[in-house]
Image (tube, rainbow, N blue to C red):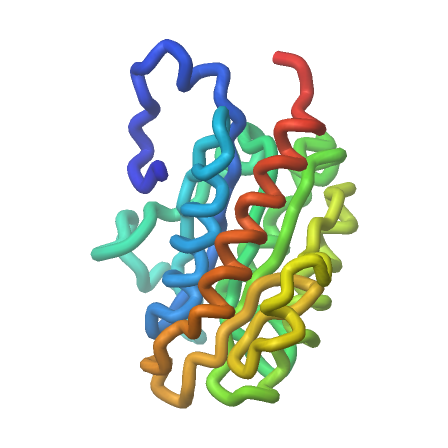
Length: 214
């Protein structure tokens, strides 16, 4: 998976489909889900995962984050949206909605909306919550709204995955999810891990089918 902005020099990599795995994470739980989804993406031949994040926002009316994050994936750029063949979008829940940092990023994507940069591309969503019933499904559904406005084709998890019926910790037909606990330290269950990988794989498979000719 690609966590740096440097592109591969391999000849065959230029023809691979690129799946943008875009997330925001405060305590690491959503980041772990993102990495599992990227693992699922890269299990599909001809697909590369590009991990990206967004900077935190502040009530202070000036930039408070460094240009390069201290750890984790690089910050997303407009070119990441324009170049991707599919998108996995993840955020912890904030009162049943995506975090302000992720919402702030999407509020600034009008140029990509006007150009249709994401139109016809597949997308999926994922989230983590502090409590088991802390708004997982509401957050997943609310994250779909800007993607629909961008003309993206949403991919979920079908019940052919038996983990959806057995899980006690996360995983929904709307997207991957995780019960992270109050401090975000609750480990991912086997069901949550399996479903996150499956979601990434399903997204990548659809991206290959829908990919625009280069």
